[in-house]
Amino acid sequence: VQLQASGGGLVQAGGSLRLSCVASGSMFPRNRMAWYRQAPGKQREMVAVITSGGTTNYFDSVKGRFTISRDNAKNTVYLQMDSLKPEDTAVYSCALASTDWARFDYWGQGTLVTVSS
Image (cartoon, rainbow, N blue to C red; front, side):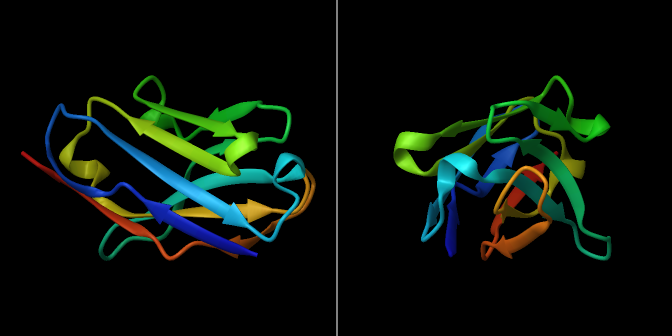
């Protein structure tokens, strides 16, 4: 299984970015997918998760601003990030679990999101 994330960059506060993560080598429609982030000097935290059936869940600090979605035909999961804040600055990684009940065993390389004030 391989995960390739893209879409990070530098954006001003209040702006938007959309991250993409393409999975290969997995039964993507069955997979639970998530986005994590890690800011400098902080622990990694889960940002959003989406099940194989499309149920979503979000970290409290991003609710109402971030949207996770998936396109099974493209083996891709997205993270639409709106109203970005400087505290959203982090390396964002996608993760894959083989089923909705499995743990996240596969990780992408991460893409850097920098939000300037």
